[in-house]
Image (cartoon, rainbow, N blue to C red; front, side, top):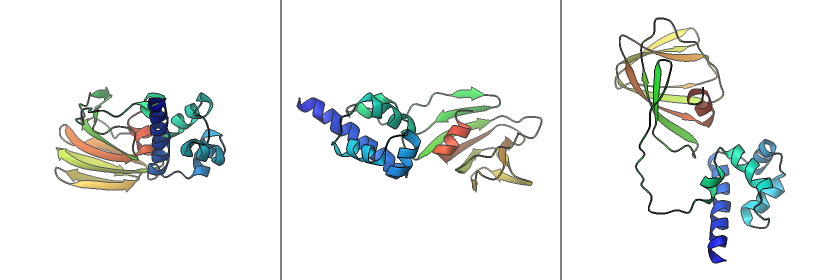
Length: 185
């Protein structure tokens, strides 16, 4: 019975930690899950049973799997071995686990003939060019960013990034809203 309680305590701790790391109040998370703030509080403090009726909406709203909530810590490898994902003229490699407030990826951008479509989404992006040059389009502005230079901007401004004169490699860091826009599309 002690092992089961340890797993439950770990899941409760992870739920609370994820909520606070992502900056959600009990009320904000309640809005995202259709659970009451008091139910979420009771789950986090151990005063309510961990049932699928609360775990599934909480995990979905926090962007984690049920497995991640219950996985017991071990001597797992801390090294991330990124697998590439290609889409259009971009290849990305995840450099962080997707359970935090910010996400880091390495991105390789191939030059294209035209100007990339600009997008707008909630969030904030930051990148550093580690090889090549890119053109950052921010609304009507065009900004060249070269090797060793970085850029940071609100993603509520229409934006896109294109390689100049050859492939470019970037390290990008963005918040969870940016992850939805950049990694999942």
